Length: 282
Image (tube, rainbow, N blue to C red; front, side, top):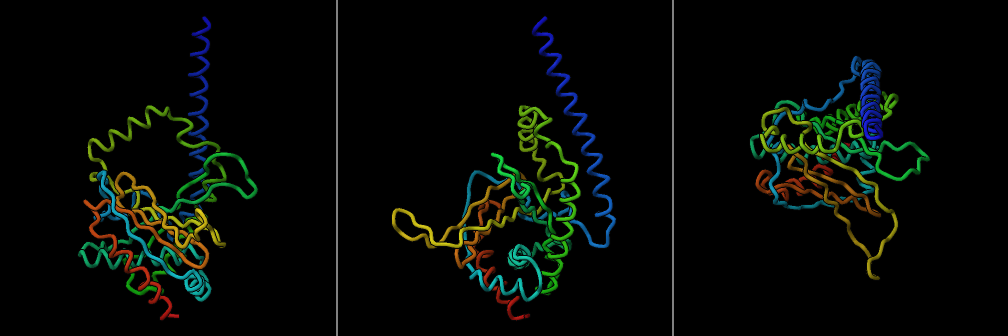
């Protein structure tokens, strides 16, 4: 009888969680409608055009990096009245556009970046991760670098409004209502049957921007001169670009699967050139 009661209680708890999650989802959908109906376009997951980046990565990895002065990036930000993250996305966008043009694989529709963002409220000191995703257009279908930057700014602004609308009614995540074994099984099935090549990409790639220390760091008594981050590759996305600001520089780490993305160094080399294009347009 005791085991039966525990089992019944567990099933009842899972049912209540599922009901709460469904109720949350419905309320989030209604909250997002005004943003979706607004004048500014909103980039959504599963709407990115397929490119060479959208294949499952093999176990092999290749790393490249680029560095640009942070004060020059901030000067572009101030000139055009956008956010620092917008300029970083624009630099990555231009580099990706150049790379895809060289391959003859630039799609007519814009690439869409999945950008990890903090979901932690100001003053929240609880232990654990609080990270969500923001989907932003990279405007790679636009040739003019300034127009591309402004379109990215518009996209990130709309994405932030969407995130606020969804977060207003968020009480739990999908992982809190789905058994870990089921999530693991779904991930294995997704990979084993090659769904990454049969379904629309969740996004074109992941681009992260991580604020770093603005003071000198040391390791074993020696000054740390650069810190190049390495982000993970995900199913269906074999390219990751992560920016890390440290003191007076912005270091951008690019990690890819060499079996899919050939020579990421070409992407890295195009980033300083992209900054020069924006500076010359001021």
